[in-house]
Length: 116
Length: 111
Image 1 (cartoon, each protein chain N blue to C red):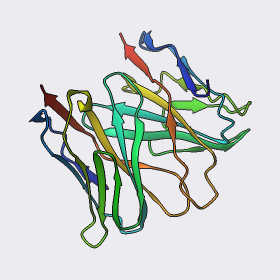
Image 2 (image 1 turned 180 degrees about the vertical axis):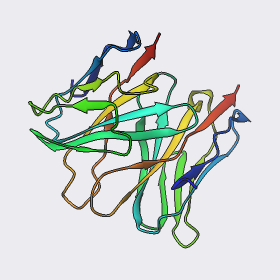
Image 3 (image 1 turned 90 degrees about the vertical axis):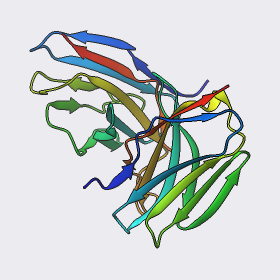
Image 4 (image 1 turned 90 degrees about the horizontal axis):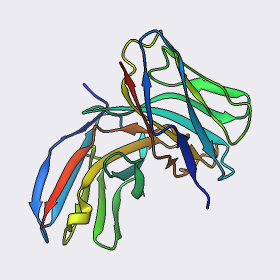
């Protein structure tokens, strides 16, 4: 089955620790995205990547880092510099970002991160 | 002021009711308008999308876009308990897929 997988489903972190959230897709999509979802605020874009070895900051990139070494993988690291990391993190992918027409973004099931 | 405004609800309706969900936006450059449905603790799934103004119907769902008023709506006819979810509106510019989301409206359909 084609789709997007995220792991782990739940993640607990102590203050001061870095954690990495996994996102894998087998849809052969070029573009991948990371969003953060907080109650009452909708989804906010953290980082996105159009092709391998390239990525761009979204609206709330501070305290986060990403890599895109493989087309199918786009891991997100939440660093200790992120002041309020407790949230629901969603990964998405789409065919591409530059074709000039809308391409549906498909979302993974999410990772809920809680800082203890 | 947020770029996309959406009433968070919750909106509670009886089974069989017609539901109206709405978003307003401030950026007149938006061209693509989407509605996503998100069940609790799941990722959003695309329900409907519309390019520019007009209506689009798919089964019990109708999406409307009024660009002159910067207002979009999603109507759900004959609502079912399985429609209970958070509905997120989203929009993007013509070139590029970066989406701007509303906060989401929680819908509860009571049987």
